[in-house]
Amino acid sequence: MPSPLTAGLGLKPQHYAEALHCGAPGLWWEVHPENYLADGGPRLAWLEAIRARHPVALHGVSLSLAADAPPDADHLARLAALVRRIEPAIVSEHLAWSAWRGHYLPDLLPFPRTHAALARIADNIARTQDALQLPIAIENPTHYLHIDGHDWCETDLLAELVRRTGCALLLDVNNVHVSAHNLGTDARAYIDAFPLHAVAEIHLAGHHADQALGDALLIDSHDAPIAPAVWALYERVLARTGPVPTLIERDGNVPVLPELLAERDEAHSALAACAQHREQCKVAPCI
Image (cartoon, rainbow, N blue to C red):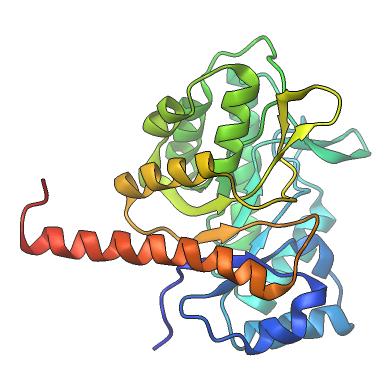
């Protein structure tokens, strides 16, 4: 029987051969499905080979669920075909928009959390889940500036999306840290208010200071090791949730696979310790 998912890594083409044969317990791989929406070719063949040996998750970046229109029907159909082909362990997307009336932007953009936006996003999630025939997980965004016009706080909006659509949540702990730093809010309070019962996946990543503004603005760059403050928030989450499949993201300055696996092993160890603690608490009360 396969090991339960513990800590995973984003799959990069330069690591395909090593990833295929990696035997770390609980290891899984995550990809952006946009890179695999083809009918064939070497990239898809590699993904299928890895999927034959390891669980795979799909982490989308282009459904634009917060846009003022439904997800592109052709894109959604191709995504559904990939889901049927790969049978992913988890499918996730961002609480953001990136398309506007036929124009596509290479970013995940914020929006005012209004009642109208909530209704629109819930409808887009429902359309996506109907097309894929499975629930998806929605990721909390990264924020770089204050915007006006909110009717909902973010954690309440996410909880309401779960209630209305049956979706799950992806809690990106680095996003929480970066956003709290940039907006001057309390990352721990955000974690404590988050609807943790609905979290199906956790992301951990690195960040860096803005080149022009320095430490006044942190960038969710995924190009550095995970910061100690993010690890501390992660431990705070696990204390509430118990073990949750956790992904280490690295999209820039990608090191050799053994270096990434060492960071992944740190998350794996935290999950194992969390699981052991919970088992002990079943036998004797934990104080």
